[in-house]
Length: 608
Image 1 (cartoon, helix red, strand yellow):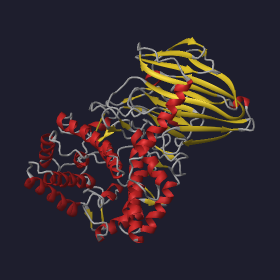
Image 2 (cartoon, helix red, strand yellow; image 1 turned 180 degrees about the vertical axis):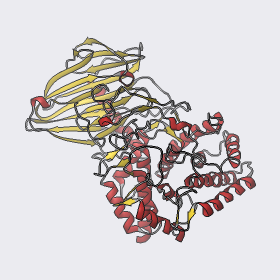
Image 3 (cartoon, one colour; image 1 turned 135 degrees about the vertical axis):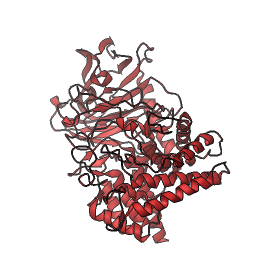
Image 4 (cartoon, helix red, strand yellow; image 1 turned 90 degrees about the vertical axis):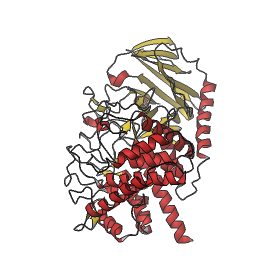
């Protein structure tokens, strides 16, 4: 535990209320519970010494060369880490049983199973929690040879292990060393719960392995409703599972990523907390799932958005905030965890997100999409609140904001914000007409058309022959790759094709796409960043829709090579091909799905 593993050397498991990262070394080094946005119990990913972890793997001190392979069981979120040595072969399985109900619970179980399939192998188990982001002490009580109680502030962690594992104390932590031979199997169950709640039932190895089967069956049943039959089945399924894992089942709210504080540049300050629900990210995630046939997720998120419409005002005076906690709480106070060193020294580590107070006008377009995406749009509840927001927006769309990338360099008239403002009115008009709902359509139409004309006049650079980032500059911005996708412009329009060519010359590097050039458009932050995976997949889709099929497929195939060993993507790709930023990133996986669908459609059209 002296070195940080690469960000990409992890798999994700979860139960639809919380999630954990398991490294290819067999270490759970990230787990926040009882919710995605709760303080961590295991946080070694951000501080190896003080973050806490659970390590279960072969004992490297007693073995020679060990080869490690990590994989998901096909079409599931069950993770298997295999250890292959000259003495034998063993594996650790990690999973959490999903709970797709609308009931939030304080109790969550992380299962770790151990098997030896050949020979004889020594193993080591270390359970070293560090509660409240490593700020709070805990106490250990050994209950018997195979169970222990670790108590932190407001949270208990029960450790239960089957034979031949015998827990012993190491300070206030629990450890074990044991040997298993071919055919042997053991189970470790970590149960987090509110302090003082009843202890979990006694460990039954048979029940634990039944839970293993139940977890696998859940994912198989869920994927069975997918309508995708295209060329990239494995990657699309993995991305869909990842989006589902990042959705908080009790409210239907997707989060942007499972982690906080992972850097966009090693040693830099761009280390944000992504465990919250952005209106934008969540809307795009749900729309990607809808395209695959997963409509229940759309209905759940629409209800969450409806509740935000009905809740009304925010500290900025706007009816919507750009992000919320997963239960809809708008308070995301940002604090610096200065006792943590950060991933490979990337400080500061931030919990909470001050960007919640920013004004980003594009969210009204994404919210309108989300509101109308569900199949129960015929329901009456929420329409009055929705039309009230759109009416308010008629008077407020023409204002500077911080933009999609949450820059901290001052407000601008961002073209993407105007684009999605156009979407807000266009989508609202379509909804009112499609469902025969009362609305001031004449006023909405006037606003929509005024935005269109403004973008064409002020968002277009004659010199660059391209649509640009904001009205005060001629900087390019990859967010505008969405222009044809939302229907603002035809993908074959000469103005769009010249914009695509300009981006290709300036923002694209070996098919990888930068969001923008911070040197040309200062964002108020020090340092640089890698190429942005969302934009790289948007680029693929834009190329496909523009008829540049060969270029699109080549770019897509190259992007897939940057996935990690189990098919997951972080936010960005660094100069040496390493994954950077919070992990795994919903933005990336939803854009992968959209790119695959676009390529399938265009390739099928060509072959018809």
